[in-house]
Length: 120
Image (cartoon, rainbow, N blue to C red; front, side):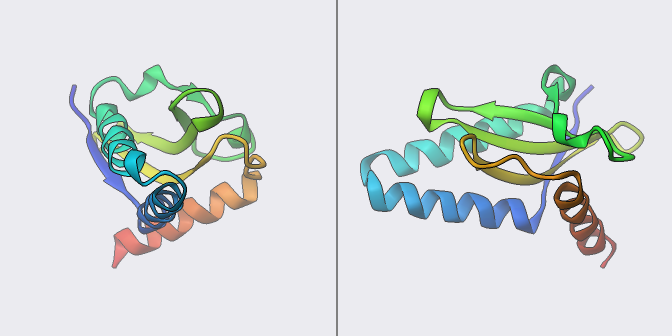
C-alpha cells in the first residue's frame, strides 16, 4: 500500500532552517543533504511502519514514529505518524539527533498545529 506524505508547515520550516545552517557551515554539502533527507521522507510512502516508535510518544493518544536520517554526528530525526484510515503519513518535525528529546506535550502541540492547518 502506498501512503501519501503530508509535511507540516513546521517540518518545512525545520528543514529550511537546518538547510541554511548546513549551507553556512558546509555549502558544498547543503544541497546534497536537502535532497537526501527529502528522499528519505518521501520513502515513507512505502512501509512507514518500518521506523521505530518514538519513545516521546508513549503518553500520546496517537503513535508517533521516528525516521533517522544521516550518520554519526550528522544524523537527524524526522517525527511522523501513520494515518491508516486515510493512507497518509504526517510529518510533524525534523531536528538534529543530538538535540534534547521532545516532550510528549511538545509533540502534541506539533500534531495539533498540523491538524489545525489541515482543517483550514
